[in-house]
Length: 247
Image 1 (cartoon, one colour):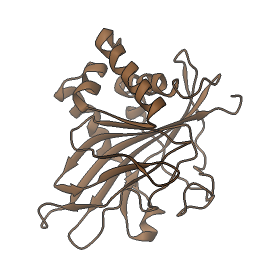
Image 2: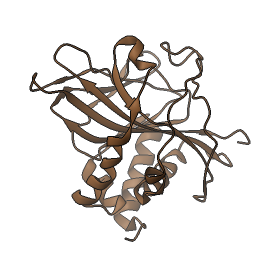
Image 3: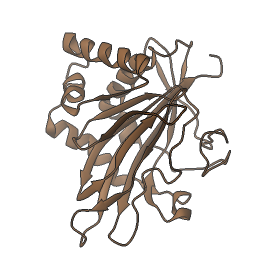
Image 4: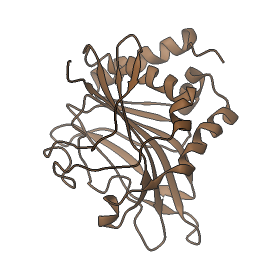
């Protein structure tokens, strides 16, 4: 399959760059993302299958959140060269995430199958193009987090148990992979004074929310099951970009 986005993909990327650079946040519809990636529903379903191989997040469990995840980190240059970095602790600055104040957290790494999936590479290329509207370092440090959040009739399904927060990066993105039996899960992006920039419920698979993390704060309200006899599920891919150490 051709990985080049073509002219329509170039226009999509330009709109996203302009919007995140001016407004601070932007939503790209799932149909546009799939067209950019050159995927149909079957191709997307194959990518979504990786979310069945995540592992419990013991840190989120402290607050009662049922969340599964993995974690990986890349070094990415502006010309698209990517290098997987050795896995170590994931740490956020203490002034950005109030739930995990400068705490080092260790998660299971991304699977070999996920790393080898060409869809991941295309997504990183697309996001790198959007991040380039905000900064132009010699290389980016890119954090990749596939998440699954579960909700039940008697428990909250908190996608962001820390509440409204920043990630301490340049570009933050959230890509909806799949929602099942879920209501809620509305994303909110605000400015430094708490004024709303964007509110959107990621409902259509492949819908992408991107934001300038340096000047916005974001959060997601809990999910709950539509059918209380079955669990609610929200699968997302969170990818962030920040200047690398030599940037």
